[in-house]
Length: 176
Image 1 (cartoon, rainbow, N blue to C red):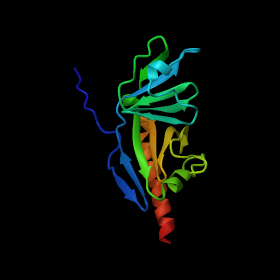
Image 2 (image 1 turned 90 degrees about the vertical axis):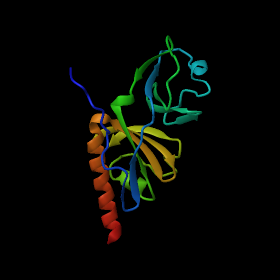
Image 3 (image 1 turned 45 degrees about the vertical axis):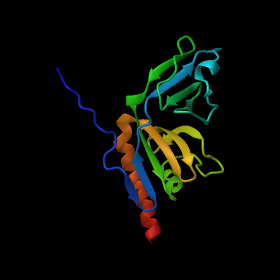
């Protein structure tokens, strides 16, 4: 029998370069929810509600993050029983999460992402699923200068490499 040893998705964090910091975090259980057509999830999700496109709905001990058409991630605690209302899958081990924070967070991400992440276009509480460098990512704006990023766990080292390169490039430009 083979014994598997759990390992952290990211190594060497937290990391600060210039005016940006990367920090790994564990959002707790993550469950994908895809409602069946015509089903009302409002009672089952209370006090939260299914998020509108591009939005995050925070509640006590959990939050729902829009992650695509007719799909959201329940994060932070065990998801409610949605039998007969929605397809649910445990995504906890399939994703790696980190925060990008600091005065240069938007500039770092702008080097890798095609979205306009300035505050007037992507406000606190916004969520998007987009490309980040060459990989799919979920981006959540949690503060004026902070974002949570989630990528498939197999892409964790690539994300760290790409973000570190963007942070170094920005810090070098600022040092001139």
